[in-house]
Image 1 (tube, rainbow, N blue to C red):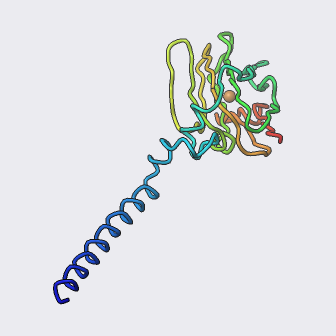
Image 2 (image 1 turned 45 degrees about the vertical axis):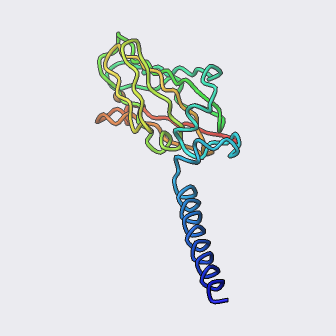
Image 3 (image 1 turned 180 degrees about the horizontal axis):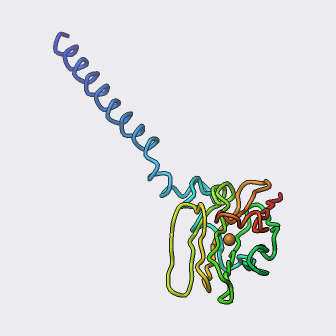
Length: 178
Ligand SMILES: [Cu+2]
C-alpha cells in the first residue's frame, strides 16, 4: 500500500511538471507576433502595416499625377491642388517638378502619409522603402511615384514648406472618403 502511494505521488508530480511545460509553450505562442504572421487560420485581413503591403494588389493602383506649377516667381500651385481618394484603395501618386521650374519644391503631408500603408517611393534611378513618408522634396526636373494606400477617412493638408511658397499658393488638400 505504501509503495502504491509512492507511485501515485510520483505520477502526480510528473503530470504537474508536464502541464507546466505545455502551459509555458502555449503562452510563448500567444505572445510572439511572428507566430501570428505565419498562422494561416488568422484569415485574410492583415494585422500590421508590413503585412498590408504584401496583401494589397498594387497592379490595380490608381495613378494620380500632381504637377508643381510656377507662374512667375510668386505664384505657385499644385496641379491639381485638391485630391480625392477612397479609403483602403491603392494609389500611385506621381509627383513632378518640371524641368522648366526655377525652384525645388516639397509635397509635405505628414498627417496624411502616416495614415497610409506605404509600399515604396520609386523613380527612374531609385526605389525607397520606408514605413511612411513625412515630406517629399523634388529638385528641378525631379519626378517620383509614391505607392500608398490611405487607411483613415479624413481631410488632410498638403503644403510646400519652403519659405514663401505656401503664401504663393503652394498648398492643397487630400480628402480620403469612405
Ligand atoms: Cu515650393
